[in-house]
Image (cartoon, rainbow, N blue to C red; front, side):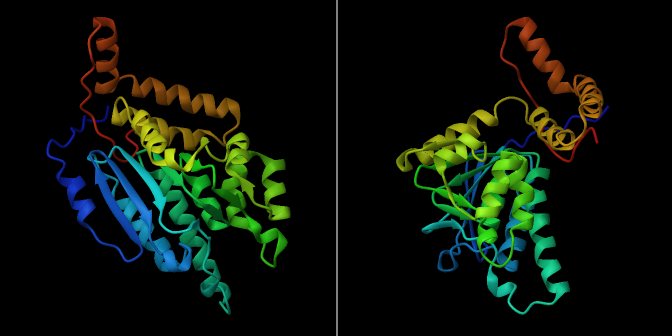
Length: 283
């Protein structure tokens, strides 16, 4: 059985992460919640190679016991315009492949993190920017935001964004977005399942904070195992998914936080969870 890992008592790791500086990002900590903000406003927060590498690094730096939840936000009039065409103009096959591999690594990093990651979308998220939102565990958008994978009405189909979008909204709606290239508004995105909810712009920050606070309640270890387990089983056939989930839940029930939660329920007292998240403890 995995050993218990204990939480930090002084927030030291959190403070160190907040002090790190990046060229295209802002990172700020508010207690156990850290916000990572795209800040390449002059380029509409385009996902250039250096931006994607920096965001991947920043997210990996937050993979610590002091950070319970992550908000992914952006500054400027656009959440993200997707890939930077300057990286693709005249690129060789090897260079183009590298670009999309770096992007895929960034998206996979979001889902590999043990913490819940919530996108806070205030404006247009298009192409790779829409993919970024779709790759987050949860998402809240202002009613003024919109979402598109527009390659279908231009010269380069949005092959990689469609992978993430289709896993949120289903085939027909994903193909409608990809083939027409048309944007959908935030209300439609919520109805289709691309985001969790659309709210008035002046409620965006508060609603996102409320969601991440509720999503980080309980045992950090249990939540991490739940998130990591979800992404491992979601694309399996049902019988295989159940086989995986049975073994995972049985093993998880033996962990200290699980036993503490059971004892607290039976004894009608608040639970005292001590385990922190880390690499998949039951992998």
